[in-house]
Length: 260
Image 1 (cartoon, rainbow, N blue to C red):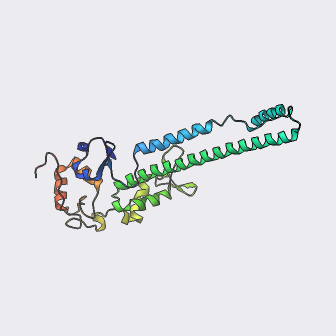
Image 2: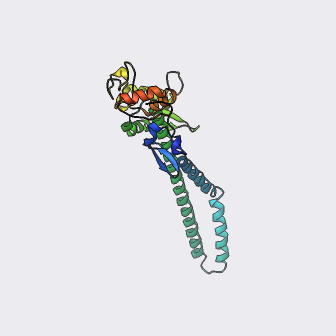
Image 3: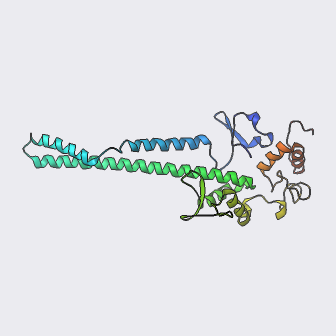
């Protein structure tokens, strides 16, 4: 599986190096829908900070506060001829402070919920795109896949993605909650256009029906069978075969230790 971030350009497999861009001293994979861990941490930190701000108001007792203001009013009333007017002034101050407090609390809660929603969306999007890549997700199908996933997947109480149908969890073949991979398998059958075709479904690419490979062999460098995950796996496990398949699809890759 491809890494999302590399510290050094030389650590990136040359066959996929073109898909990385240097940002702030790191090499990051150009992938729609995914987000760096630093961004997720930033949203989490903001959420914690907002909770701390809300906690500052947890000990405020409006009734006791009003009682204190009332005592102040009594003190002022003792020096004034019109007690009714002073009481009215105190009540207005209490009402204004209570309204200001409630407005600030509502704003903080709204901002917290907004950040929580955005954090959930980023985590779900990253998980579904990563899993989709294992099934040969097309580069042009990221937005479609993410849109489908957002209607199904949520973050559970344990912080892990869980598939839901309304308020009811979706169960898999084992009887437990369906996994992301099992959901992706079903989607590959019902929405196969989102994924690269394989030899069993009559795909084509490169120089033949299997993308330039031999009979029954899918070429991950083929035009319609292009798959970065499979390319990286072949480069690591069988570089000679990787070079042969790339050449068959009209691509040139450089692998250390393999002669031309």
